[in-house]
Amino acid sequence: MRTNVNITDEEKATYYAFCAEHRIATDGEAGEKNGALFGNLIGVKMNSDFTQETLEVAFDQLKAQLKFVSKAQADADALARKLRPEEIEAYNAWAKNQRLLIGLDGSEEGYANVKSLLGWMRGNPVTGHNLDLALGNLINNPQVGQRIYFHPQPRQQDRSVVQGRKNHAFGQEETKPKAAAGVQQQEYVNGRKNHAWTPPEEAAKKVTAAADAWSEVIAIQLKDWVLPSQQARLENEYKAGLASGKSLRDISSSLAVIVKDRQRGR
Image (cartoon, rainbow, N blue to C red; front, side, top):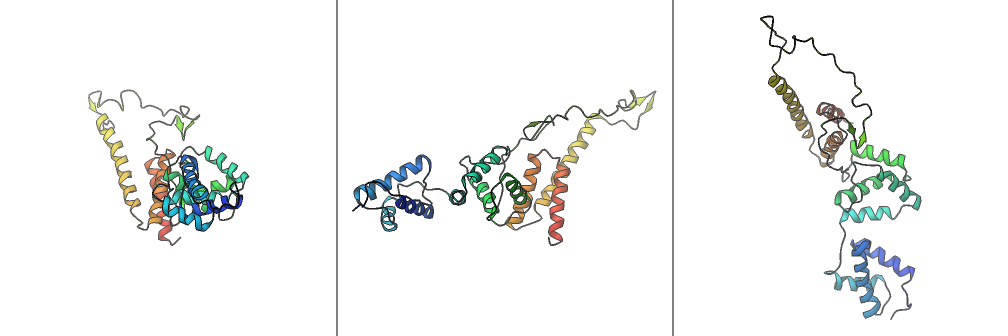
């Protein structure tokens, strides 16, 4: 028989701990439905208090009706519950400015990011500065089970906007001096063949060939490591480079540094 008309703080703590252990949803609409199911069975039908024993009995009967959360979400929630109010505010303010990082949008990638970032802290206070350090370290040196996910970015065709912000330097670059009229643009000059002239279609092929060459180099570099954590490190560097608008050549250079460090035993 219940000892209190209303659910006590001790009962609430026991309930939330039980839900966390079994990955039972406690937030949102799913959490409300789960709470109602437990409340009706334990508080009304069983007329009992919320204890470890009554929760286990109810869980066996309600398992098919309950809504559960993924391991990534459960881990992220467990870490978030340990934060102080000012740390939660600092995290939310920092995450709001991360345009490329997948945030808490209900996706597995978003929960995985929270888990990795908060897990990296290891007792350090959650501040904007420490989150910047965590993000950089997780991109360049992820440990087993750690990975950072970014929103897919379309290949940028111009540089007027970089990472979602207007590039004020765009259009202000010095224009390269054009070749003298009649020298580079014509195949024949004064009846003689201009050996510096390149047909437009050939010039386009060279540009495409260069891009394809760097793509092939990057493909080889991405296969250099075989362990999951090592592979994730290279892939994160590659995705971060694409997201920031780097050229394939610059991305390949960044990957080369990581590969060399591994070869040196770093």
